[in-house]
Length: 183
Picture 1: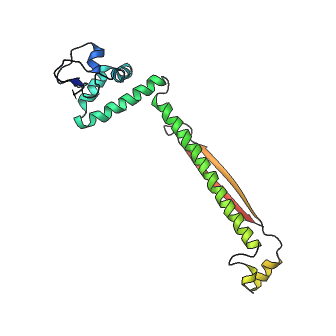
Picture 2: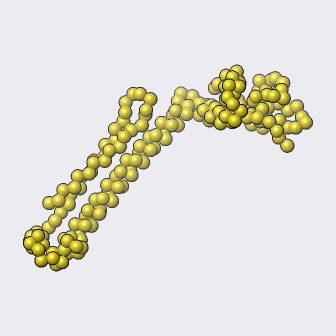
Picture 3: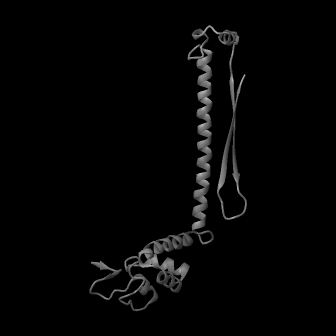
């Protein structure tokens, strides 16, 4: 049975104290967050942040926030071990690029849907279907529509992905401009 990262009744040190080769006190600040059976968890955090800094951070935080802080430090340390240059910023940048790509693909798909809807509307109008059909009305405008041989719709679409240069915001803006011409 585990309690605070140590086996009850035994003097088994937590992963932090074991790595630091020191006696694990009953009130060890590391014990609840770095159990003895997860030594790599503390090893990476120690390698990136240092045990003294982690101890100071945990001491300054209220007890109810320490678990979240440790989770964040473990994530950042593991990311830094995987990618020593960019760390978790590299992962965030990769995810931002994926978001930008997906937003562009979504804009293209939405524009294609509009294009197909316009073509379908033009096709129905041209073949005499729908409320604007020449056969449904005897108005002068319907006679004018009958005299037109072909109604065509041209849809031009431009997707502009604007990357911001410099600054801390690495996001991009996606603008879709669609022009529909009726000829």
